[in-house]
Length: 414
Image 1: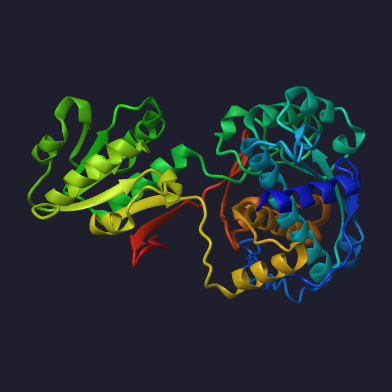
Image 2: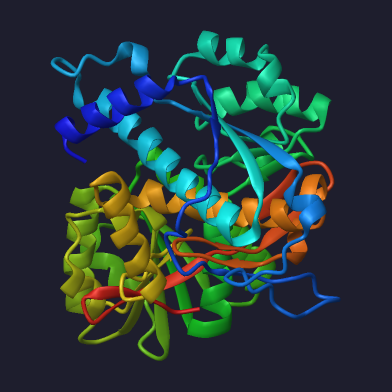
């Protein structure tokens, strides 16, 4: 989104009033929606395009509060810096995608939603002030805030009042908040690491697993849970962990086996290290069979050479993937552009999928929608939801994708 378009968006939101309620009125559905599956005891799918309307539940108005860091009071369109603009972009795009989802379900299911939009900024004091609002406390659903400290403040409130709270973007472990009414959308780094360990054991079937550390402190956030995953899921496989500063690049070959598949796990995101280790692995791939498992953040690392990644048979885990060839995605982009004169970002898709999933359940189940989410898988435009229920931590998304660099793109491997 350009700065000018952002300014127009901010003006649009300011005119609406950042803390005023928004009433959802029927509009033409923007996409051919994804599918929400009924509980396992009733395996037939819900056809969301031609649903059977439940008049009693449809007439129940569901109050949704969306709490996002627009930061409208801190942005001057003439002097705003990129970080300020980026946060506002994130919030605006998420809001627009979420709003389109509610509009779609309102038409398709005859549902009745009232959407309240609040600007939390990136300010603890401002966030805490929102908690005191009566309109927040009487919500049927609260989506946001975005940042962990703000989520914690809201979590304490919603736990007491038994209001479902969605953590829409933070990949924070749900045990941080200890709230049975919390719904965590993004996968945690622990989940990524465990998924990688399981994929290595079940699919790659290696002769040797070698984890190579760069020495950066952050990589332990991935390396430690990965090793726990190997211990519990792939016990018995030959595994070694080395630091590149201790062995140097030219000695990597000493830790590889000449027979069978060598899976190299690289938990680093440091550009200098990755370029050097890839250079060495490319040379070794002439002699050894090598497969690389990378950090999930590699998907956004523009410095990576995709041809090298393909040559090294590279996989990463991911919380989401957008298939731009899919008809529903094409339709969404077209309708989003028609409505907002902008291209949807990653956050527009995130907002739509979360909004569509929860609004569909609200339309069908009324105020009991938060019961047994683990029985309602969802295939979306951006996210796939397969929630796991924990009596202390609420629901968290157990669906983690494994993607492979192939034909100069990332394709689903699991």
